Image (tube, rainbow, N blue to C red):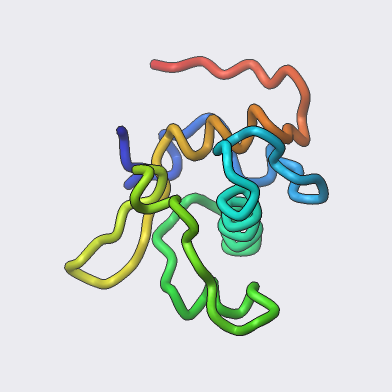
Length: 111
């Protein structure tokens, strides 16, 4: 598990992921895939894989309270207790992109 602390080091950007479709099979659980899509949408709005607050995600949930649905306990999102924010991992990004790329066949070069 690698937490993204410097968004510039991640070759896949939030805009490279299509959030108009469901992330079928990405996390093996429908509700987790819905939650992942909302996380990506927030990161798209913010312009990167930076830290996010629970309150920011609550705004994307029609019922008013965002539920992580196995993203945290699955190790795809990590809570930063120092400032009570959340960060995604490279595995999260890779799974979301693999399920719904906005840019098919993006050449990802890991350095």
